[in-house]
Amino acid sequence: MKSIMIMYDSLNKHMLSAYGCDWTKTPNFQRLSKKSITFENMYVGSMPCMPARRELHTGRYNFLHRSWGPFEPFDDSTPEILQNSGIYTHLVSDHYHYWEDGGATYHHRYSSWENVRGQEGDKWKGEITDPILPEHLGRVERQDWINRKYLQNEESTPQAQTFARGIEFIKKNRRADNWSLQIETFDPHEPYFTLNKWKGHYPHKWDGPHFDWPKNQRVEESQEAVSHLKYEYASLLTKCDHYLGLVMDLMDEYSLWEDTMLIVNTDHGFLLGEHDWWAKCRMPFYNEIANIPLFIWDPRSKKAGERRSSLTQTIDVGPTLLDFFNIKKPDDMQGHSLRSVIEVDEPVREVALYGIFGGHVNLTDGRYVYMRAPNKENEPLFHYTHMPTHMNSLFSTDELRKMQWHQGFNFTKGCPVMKIPSKGGKGLRNFEDLETKLFDLETDPGQKNQIKDQTTENYLIEKLISMMKATDAPEEQYTRLGLNI
Image (cartoon, rainbow, N blue to C red; front, side, top):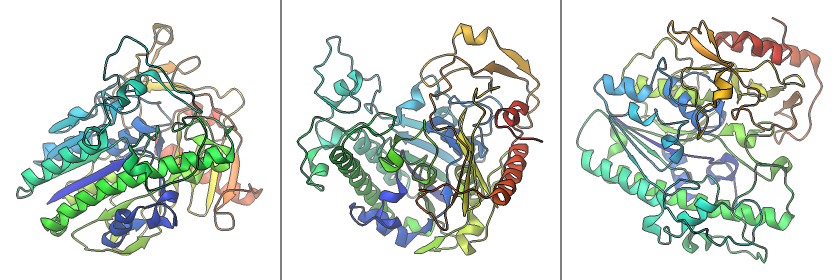
């Protein structure tokens, strides 16, 4: 048995033709939908990038205990469990956060790994003289502008190299058994840098300044600028679609559909002006961010061209891979194998919990979305960790001087952990619109109008508390959220 996981960053479900978008050019995602199971109610768990990847490894929520950070000593790792069970695991990625302070322990869980340089602010090419930055809207950053100078032909771009190395692995090992490959590209994450061959798919009039990277804030630009940025995103999306097609071509050529599970997923979505917001972290997690695409081909059931409505989450991916290779999941994994969902759409959960450290704590049952806001002070709030690093820096000595020891949680395997106040640290974002919200997706799928329904809210609060208890949430989280337990 073999498995291939193709993972994107910031892949928007609502921009894919397989999910009903009628103007983007994504024929291979459409082709994939016909060859696999398409999931309608796949939700994020912990946001954003590295918290989501921790969930892929551990199969459990982490945003109530910690912000962005590395793999912990007590964590379970799906790739490592596979490796220890005789399954060769290989990671190919251009997602440069794997090699920063806040992610530098995940890739070592694989049997082997390759990294591709040059995405976004990757500290790749060194130039002492500052580049001349263009007149622009949104963001333009020094390192990214330097990196782009070295990415002026298609073969040199990170996504192209990432897929080339993944394809090399498939070709070299196609006749071998018992391996699991993860091809992971940073695209279509912002900035939406593509070459003209991809931009040419979306000709449009734009006389404004350079704009392919929005700020993480409310929309201040004109409607013309919003439309232009959507075309820039679509260009990168069509590039993603092309390279997906190359892997599917190999699966056709080598008959890998017979014994190879294929998972195509992402960590989260992105707001491209919807709800008058850009990006993904500071605002409430509307479904453009939280309800993400997922496609799975399971050669055991051979189910294809069908859709599933059961609630699923990122924490289910690891258990699904373990089940495929007939390996029992660890007790600490909260996720479930999706085999029953794939085969007959049998639900594996009643509700889905999701959020970001210090933000709303969200819950959906598939119909209602409940966003529980914290108190005005957003306190008390602590990081619980053995690995005190932020995204691209260590915790400061000021933060660590306030550290206390905590006895640990049900998933720390008897280990006490550092308890570090979040106030004043880099791990807490500048959130906006932190108000409790309730939406009925049945009557308002676009989440345009909040509802007031105390009976429904009480039901969702009960489910929320139950889920928080199941994940052994710190006691102060209930205080922060104004929940009585």
